[in-house]
Image 1 (tube, helix red, strand yellow):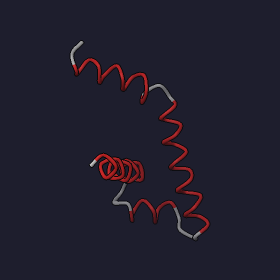
Image 2 (tube, rainbow, N blue to C red; image 1 turned 60 degrees about the vertical axis):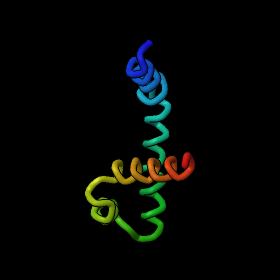
Image 3 (cartoon, helix red, strand yellow; image 1 turned 45 degrees about the vertical axis):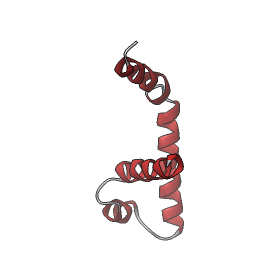
Image 4 (cartoon, one colour; image 1 turned 180 degrees about the horizontal axis):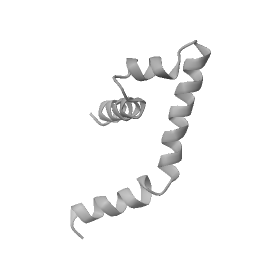
Length: 70
């Protein structure tokens, strides 16, 4: 199996399967709930995140993983 095929299969099994999607959705929900407790609206968060909460969370996860691996 080529590495590209392996990566695509792994992505399908682990990322696209719904488990990771629900985990990602839960992160967004937690972020929104925590922000609401602080009096910060969703619109304010989106603006502070540079226009996209999902991209912000993905970037934060990427940064954390890179720090852990290196």
